Image 1 (cartoon, rainbow, N blue to C red):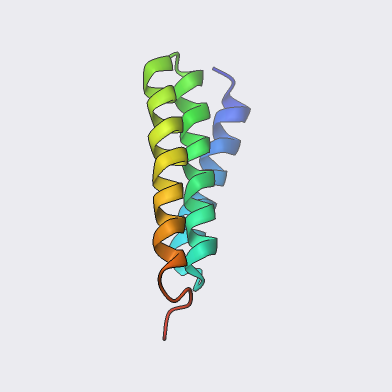
Image 2: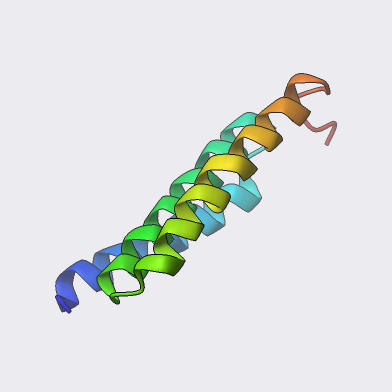
Length: 81
């Protein structure tokens, strides 16, 4: 494993996690969570866990993001606080 890449991915994951819980727009939070899931996919594939990486990409970044966006389209996007 390349330690500099691992550290950069870890830093980006932490930034995505903090941004996802602090952003007020639900669509932006969904996009940030999709980016988080894609970073997890890269980490799983770097650890030679191809089956887990494919599952994370398909379910985490794919299906979940589409379902979240469909739910947001039917509701109000911004929180009231």
